Image (cartoon, rainbow, N blue to C red; front, side, top):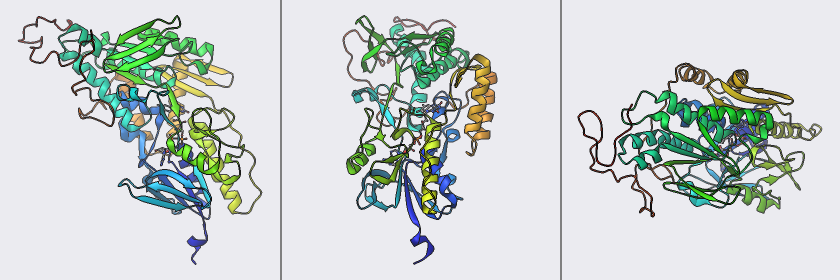
Length: 472
Ligand SMILES: Cc1cc2nc3c(=O)[nH]c(=O)nc-3n(C[C@H](O)[C@H](O)[C@H](O)COP(=O)(O)OP(=O)(O)OC[C@H]3O[C@@H](n4cnc5c(N)ncnc54)[C@H](O)[C@@H]3O)c2cc1C
């Protein structure tokens, strides 16, 4: 038996912040680490909105897990989707991309599978309103946002043009707020001089949320400041609004007084809720663990599942003391699980219970404007934006794209230039392509495609009977 065979096996499900930090802590421990992820990269989710609005390329926010683990000789990466575990036999069950089965024996298991977008029981909305969790989502949103301006430019029916120039966002948390601000900046700054038949700055951005105010978790003071900044940017905020339907051409929303209003919008984006991925339910069923309302696995204060001291649950998929789903919780729980395994393998005293050190939170509103909340310190405006910048540069430490991100931010922040606007017009995933033929019209709804064969207004072309592009 060689050294490797006698070493304990640690399997980590998920290479996000929790899984990756757990793996790194174990780099000098006498264990064999297998990190299984259904995606080949570690994704920096907080900057997804910059990828989708053309500031950063996907390569700047996603790094191959193999690359990140290449120097860690005791770690291996496997591209596969974990489907469940055999808790008694201590085996992780997974599916290769080709569909065949894989198994990994473990002595310790770290579950770090994150969360996915939730449509609160209305998964059918997903085809019209992409969420914002993965690189695929960011690229779909990029295609839809920039594609909408193109479709508006060639639309001769004013109702259709106005629909393509209307962007609706559901959810006024940090992601919804960041995206809303970015789309207005794209419209009023980046695209300002690029169109001949439309004024991009006419683009309306509607932000819907069931709560009282945007960024509510930041507290009333910062939330009010964020609302004022968004209003100045031109974001139309509809609070106390519950979405009752989303389809190909817009959404319906119920206000507090019960009235339902239909909003025509060519682009609807969903940033409203999260739920644990299916693997969490499979692990709970195999171990008898309880799940919270969002399906997250409930753990004890050592981040393990009751009666299973060998199974740690970390990051967003963990439910413990109502800790928020943020990077710091993921990193700290990942590090804690790794340290605890290191202790146990070395035969030392068990580590102390997990304690979260809250380092605060930040949200980007627009160029030069952010909100930051650290304990009792609440910042907004330019100072908060500078703090945001340093936090994110710090966050990127250890990922090779830190310098690249900085170089991309410079033209975007200084000259409104967004260099990463490339998108394809192909169908992507489940989301309907902006260029595909849409289902038959519902009564009173103008559909894209109605302009086929109509000459466009512009140099040498006469305005059509159905309307001309706005001047400018
Ligand atoms: C748009 C957006 C903006 C955000 N902004 C901020 C912010 O500004 N500040 C902040 O602190 N936090 C922010 N967050 C939250 C933060 O990104 C998460 O808290 C953090 O990524 C959680 O890390 P994790 O490791 O638990 O999960 P994740 O980073 O989601 O990683 C989970 C990994 O598990 C893999 N996985 C899932 N299921 C399986 C399976 N069955 N088999 C194999 N692999 C699987 C996934 O592919 C993924 O790689 C944001 C999140 C989003 C989506």
